[in-house]
Amino acid sequence: MTEKREDEGSGLKNEDNSNVSRNGFSIKPDGKTFTNYLTFWIGQLFSLMGSSITQFALIYWITVETESTFLLSLGNFLYLMPMAVILLIAGVFTDRWNRKLTIIVADTLQAAVTIFIIILFQFGYTDPVVIIIINSCRGVFQAFHTPTVNAIIPTMVPKDKLSRINGINALFSGMVQIIAPMISATLVLFMPIQLVLWMDPLTYVVAMVPLLLISIPGVMNGEKEGEKRSFVRDFKVGFKTLVAVPGLLTMLLVAMIVNFMLTSYFVLSPFFILIVHEGNSIILALMQSFVNAGVIVGALITSLKKNWSRKALIYFIGEYMIILCIGAVALTPLGFFPLIGIAMGLMGLIIPIINTIFQTVMQITVPPDKLGRVSSIDWAVSLAISPIGGLIAGALGEIIIVNFIFLTTSIIAFVAVTLFWFLSGIRKVNYDDPALLEGVNERLNSF
Image (cartoon, one colour):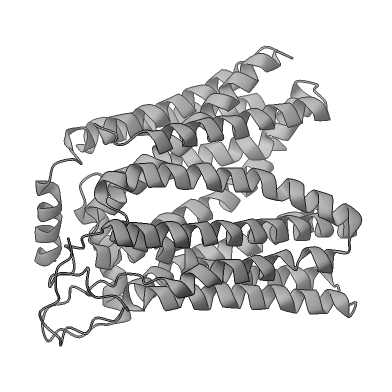
């Protein structure tokens, strides 16, 4: 199943070379690498749980301590925006460095930042602004962790299992994101925050044990013989790869447009339900639970579905359905909450499906030695659009009727997605065609 590495002077930097061919693109994951990935993945779920508990506890503390919406939004902004900026360059290093070591260092530094915050709380130094700034460092280290973890998936998981693994990832990550806040909310009621924050270092240790015991396949850098590597060139190659894969840039731009619309909706939905529709806290919680339930169902579907044929078509249909759901919510009669709940549940169901399709397309089409850079661009765009969209939506909500904002953004998104579908040529792309990857490599060699 594996291919032997024949040229010893290639400069391969990762620890397990047995799964790498001479061109760096013919990695053959097998049963052993798949088992190693599952071991690694279980550990990472514990790490995600600890990080989510910590983040919720800090947000809760900032809210209660300051009673300031500005500081609350500042905390969210300073956590996400540095991560988005660093992600743009982190992918370059992800493709250069030993990936196992990168994950170890990133996770260790995140845990160290949490321990430092615990020490500050222990000694009573609890200036909210200082805590917010220090906590933003966790986002910086996460920027190196995320693209690295995404880049190793196709090097360890066989191609016929990629779609299911992405679905299972979405399912369990979604469940963790639902469970972790409840655990954190319960803990902060019965113990000081500095004790709650210890959940992050403890789960870090749990995640580190399997990571140290497994090997992670390496990839060759794909450089031509005698060619010197530079950061600027590697950075440009990430964008060139995104352009070289047919339809990938189109899918990313469509996702950016729809994410902007979704961010506007989720930021303004509490106001929309409580003020515009004269609901209460129970109805608001119920509406949000419809989204979470939909996410779990959608992720369960993707984990059971072996492969998605006509990936581009299904992806665009999913984006259209989300847009139509927002439009339906905007036109909902006053107090008709069942329609809002159905629309939110449907949105939740669709999101993991289209995310899984996009992730799978990226994993099967992008050469392994460039996947870190492309993944980092994807995450950077996704993260950056959220706080920006939230700020714009909040400002518009002060001067424009919320229903009108929802309806207008859905119409704009519908027109934009339609133009991309008919003008970009993506509807003619078959991502199951084996010749597609060869064409990608030819385009990259021509740059």
